Image (tube, rainbow, N blue to C red; front, side, top):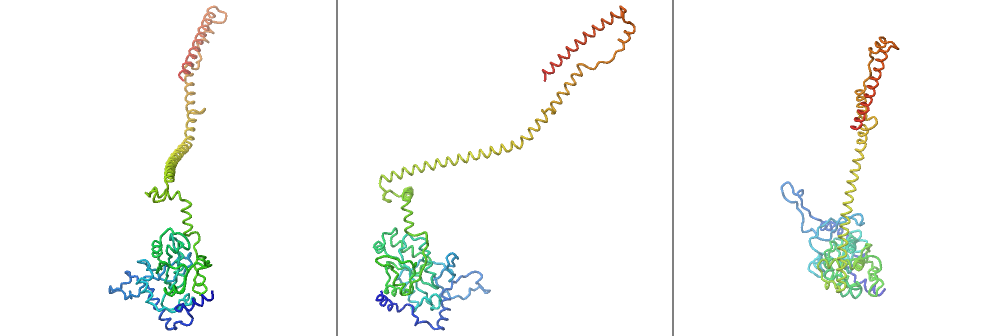
Length: 419
């Protein structure tokens, strides 16, 4: 280990050293230059002066990359540089654009303290992060975001391992190397992509790409016969730590696909993929088709049930509404009925009045008669004529009274029948 470090450290002659700090005057010039190069020019109507001319702006000093967004507090990242809109993907290493970027700067050593303080001169700090980046997801993007913001003014270089190297050291990938290169290249935080990156970094690779620091999560990465592939980088003081995003990884995504294999196979079959495209046997194809038909029937049954429940619910709602209205009106109806047909109601009063009038009409009250008194005087008791006339009168009155009673009874029967 000590021999490797002795061999490794001298070759990092371009890396930070405490003996080659720029002077105070150079630092002031470099700070002003850094502010100018990180300036984002935004021309609006308010920028036009009274004469109708645009303000004098040095557009050549505008940088298209090496700028970051203002992040939320949840990301725990300070607002360091102005927001920039990226117009193109990151460049690949060993291309003219990459070479021009390296030719722009004098590469003097930068210490971690100087890099954190931002007093290392005008050139950006070149930070390297590597990985496989299969099924590029939010965890990858957040790791690269942290690497981009781990220090002020970072030029982020990302190494992506090839298919052969990945299969040899880790296993098969879902995406091929070209897809993985393009996924990383179009991440907004990345400035440069190194294709076919090495599994373990060495001094030659660090010097070739002018790397100042290496960013990765701090957990030991055991692979390819190493206890930690970043062990030597950490020992040299060139390592900056990032944090993993819990709950998401390429292995987790693949586990979801394997767990719900049938569902995703049926999904793709329904979208036009052939069983051959999905490597599905004839028996499994028929099984999936059967399950698809069963699910279709279940959906229809569920739809019918839902509609039936909705219909029943509507009927119940209307029934309750009618019952409520009936309850509101029932009191009024019952009261009106009792007022009309109750014991003291109008109808009974009419009937009683009618009965009284009929009785009065059939049997009016008798008036007193003077003739009977005179006859008694004229025919004293015991006389034959008077007695005979008095007896005949009594019989006649008795017959009249009997006939009147019969007529009254007949009239009452007719009245009751009519009622």
